[in-house]
Length: 331
Ligand code: ATP
Ligand code: LTN
Image (cartoon, rainbow, N blue to C red; front, side, top):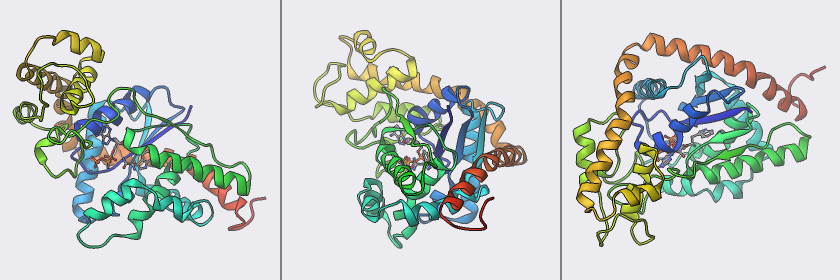
């Protein structure tokens, strides 16, 4: 089973990214044939950014992934812009298999475009076509992601199907893998919104590398709902989110968490969640600094990953080009 996923080089990965995506990457790396993980710097250029900063954040993200347990012996870890097939295939798919109307329906574009102060780039609109190219260039069977990427994956499946219908069987139509618990970790301050790097209130987002004292403070000040029972309910999004977080980080079911905190106050429950999250992130934080300090080693790992990635994507994109009647005919 071929596995592929991408993660943005924002550097400041948060608890939602970790629970929804990174922990799945680690769980799946030995099952992949191979498992391929890509730090998607080409996606990051679609909003305002600083070139030197982008390189730094790419190293941060790579070091977080390695500190979380990705092992370049077990998976392919690489930087998207090192493998030009991603950009080429984006255009091939955009020209023939991607409908403008479908791109126009993407929620993430609508949300992100209103947040842009200056240019709303055409690249931001094209973002899901690049994401489809990432996946299809490897004929991936399975794509581990958080819940917010469901619509983009539906589009990737549609693009693969459109291409295959028009040019003959070329691409695998990928399946997604969205975890049952933890696929949508909510903002601690606004539990109606997903936890995000770009949220309005920094107190609502817990970062993987954040200092334990700061993590504790954020959980203590998390928005909770009226009522006092530690129990999930539709009108209790704050408490429900904390129950879900504690369930994942402590390996207990949500029912078990509710039973364990029966009769306890919100205050002591929040402290328990904070402590469990701090312990959960501690091993990653401990390994991170050493890995991040050695940029040459990070570059070497990414370079080796890019070679392995190119060896897979090259022939797949060449076959697509040939079927489209482009380039010198393949004999
Ligand atoms: P953000 O909104 O925080 O900037 P993102 O979704 O734009 O994150 P990435 O960092 O590339 O960008 O996301 C990596 C993975 O994390 C994706 O698979 C995404 O689905 C997942 N993810 C993002 N936010 C959450 C969340 N709140 N809960 C669970 N998974 C999430
Ligand atoms: N769009 C995703 C990141 C991403 C991705 C991918 C995920 C880019 N390419 C391919 C899975 C497969 C995001 O915003 N989180």
